[in-house]
Length: 120
Length: 120
Image (tube, chains in turn cyan, brown):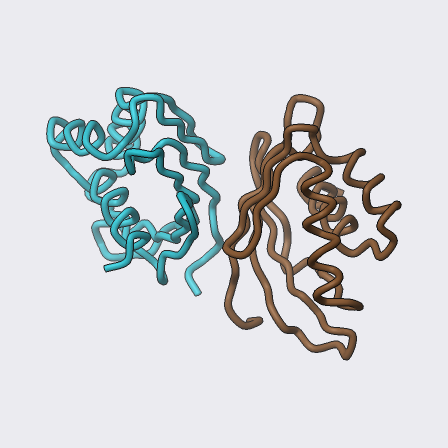
């Protein structure tokens, strides 16, 4: 597994974790303490901020899951990957592309997200 | 014209400028002094570093030009856009997607670039 695939899977696993305690644990493991996130709809900072943001998103879309679209790539500390949001009924309802960077310890320290159009 | 289209066009205009003096002027106008750039092939810092990097790329690919692909989008200080590199003969030889951020003065202070596959 490439480093880029691994970081994308780690990232999406936290978004897909239904249990809040387990999700906070995942975030505390894989995100830097001073991490930052921004996309067109949300932004947050710090491990607690990230966990709270994901919690709010999951409450808004219960039962939805994020799946990887295509192959993550990147260079240096940067990884780019695309995702789709799948409804409990299996419908592809949204998607985006995230650019994730990692600090010297390999923890996610910055995410800039963009929304993509309909599935190809 | 959207802000995102404007920043993409400003960015590509510098890459496409054949005259080194005019290019340095464009960079000094639109880039922040502490600007940073990284993609899978190149990285540089500062206005002089950016200008020198573009100069080197243009010497490697004389007569080639960068054209915008699709519609730039973004949010806040971030703009995302895709480009293709066109040979003097008109062939589409490469492409990528760049994420550009601007500082409080609207100058480009960070670019993270990725390479894309063949043209759609």
